[in-house]
Length: 192
Image 1 (spheres, helix red, strand yellow):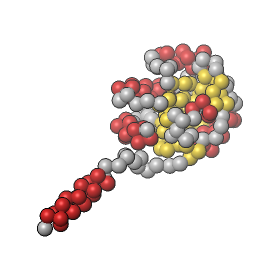
Image 2 (spheres, one colour):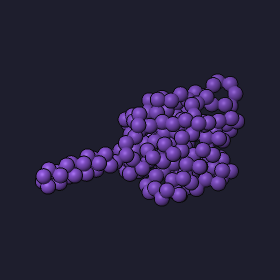
Image 3 (cartoon, one colour):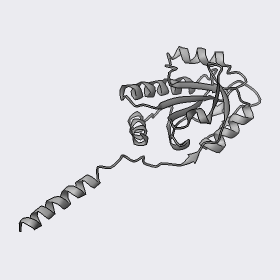
């Protein structure tokens, strides 16, 4: 009788502990990011290898945007602060300019300073062609970027992307209005 009772307790504990594993990312994808060559707001070269082994949060913005980019940058800033508050390590933020012929490193720096961005783990990228960023966004991030022949407003989607240490995109989130900060923090933790 004692053996059976002990066995039952052992099995119950084993079942409970089996549910206490690592958190999982819901609706996860696995899209590899191909190499890129860009220039940071500090006028330094940046390639995919510079992000290898790090978790990174990416978005697509441009400095002369009059509608969605300022709120997206504010939302990324809030997430950056949450990452710091949660003491999450090895997390980088990357903003790709979708208007690289206009967005020089100096313009990106001025834009980011308006939001009081912490540059310690946030890099703004430019230094590639318009054709490159349109193709790179479509091929890697499954998102649309297009600079019209007239006007100065680049058409692009408003997602924030989570990229794992393996350089593969794991998930996308609304980066404009319905930002799910808690879900993003949960998913970052799941990758650590």
